[in-house]
Length: 490
Image (cartoon, rainbow, N blue to C red; front, side):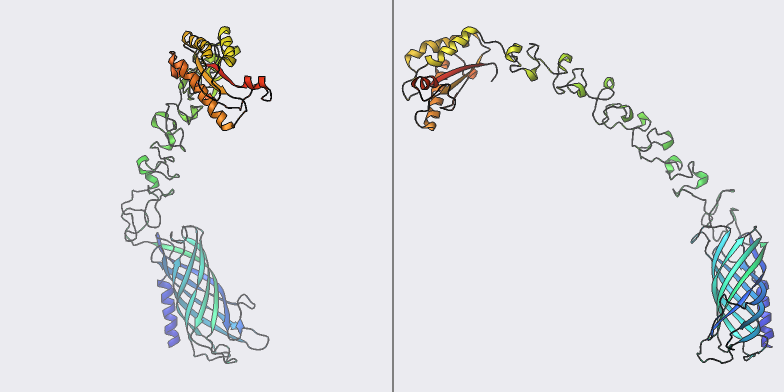
C-alpha cells in the first residue's frame, strides 16, 4: 500500500509541475532517458560499465525569471557489478521535486538560447524486487546537481541534467560492508522538452515581464527591455536606447545620449576637435594662446601671435616674426634681421660700441676721435706731473690740463676715463692708493674748470699696468702717468 501511495504521489507531481520554458509558456513536459550509477561503500560506478539504464518523464512550472519548480519521474535498473562478487541488481521507481535556479536570468549570466542552472530538491525511491537486499526498505532522496537547457525553438528544447543523490539507508550492498555510510547514486539524463500554455500574469505594458516583476512599468510598446522590464541601455549612460540618439556610445542627457568627449559643451558629431576641449566659435577646436587663431591653423599654438604670421608672434612689433628676429624684444630693421640701429650709423646696436652716438664701422660704431685730441692726450701722458709721493699737481701741468678742459667743452658728446698709474717702487698697496688719489685730483681740476663731473670717472691702477721696463730710470718715468680715454657712454 505504501508503495502504491508513493507511486501515485510521484505521478501526480509529474503531471502538475511541468518544466517552465519562459514567461510566454508557463508549462512544459518532456521525455527523458539516462543511467543510474551506484556510489557507496564498495566503490563508485560513475562513467563505468555496465550502464544501468532508465527512462521517465520530466515536467515543471515557471515561477519567476530566476526560478522554476520541476519534477522527474523515472523507472529503470539500478545495480553494481564487481568481479569480486560484491554485486547487486534491482528495478527502481523514483521521483524528485526540484527547485531550479536559472543562471541566465540577466543577473549572473546574460539571457540566451543555452540556459545553465543549478538544482536541489527532495524525492523518494521504491525498489521492486529484493535481490541481495531487503526489498521492503524504500529510500527518501536528497538530489542536487546542475543542468543545461538548449532551446531548439520557442516551444522545443533539449536538456542535460546531472544529479548526485543521497539516500537515508545503507543496505544496497547486502551488508557486505559495515562502514555505515548511506548509499548514494548518480543520475544522468537527456530530455526532450515541449513547452505549452500561456502565462497567467498581468503585463500591463506588454513588454513580456509581469507587472509584479517589472521595475519599469509603462514602457512604450515595442521597446526592447531587459529581465527587469526596463528599456535596454547598451552603452550604460542612463539613457534608454529608444531615447538615445547614440545608443552605442556613452553620452549625456543634454545631448540626448550622444557624447561630448572633451567636455567643451559641443556634441562630438558637431565638434571638429572632439578630443580637445575647445570653443564654439571654432567648432569645438581650441585656441590655447587666445590669439583668435585655432590651434590646428596656428604655427605657434602656445604663443599669442598675429594672423599675418599664422599665429606666431612679433613681440617688438617691427613687422619681423620672432623666429626670424635676432632682436625679438627690440623694435628694429629688416636689414639688420630685426635689430635696431639707434644712432642711425648703419651699425646695429648689438654690434655698436656706441649705440647712441653716430660713429664709424672702423671704430666699432663709435665716432672717430679727432687727431688734435689724440695729440693732447699723448702729451698728457708725460706732461702731468705731481709732487713726489703726493697727489698734488705741479703748476707745470696746468697748461696741458687746460687743453683737456677745452677738448671736453668743445665736444659735449665725449665722456672721459681718467686712469692713474705708478712705477713699482715702494709698497704696491700704497702705490694703488697714490694712483687713485692722483686720478681723482685730475678729475677735480677739470671739474673746477667747468667740466661736468658726470662726464668723467677716475680710477687708479697702481703699478699693475706698466708700459715700459721698471728696471730703468726712463722706464719708471713713463710708467708714472695719467691716461685719458674718450668714451661715448658711461
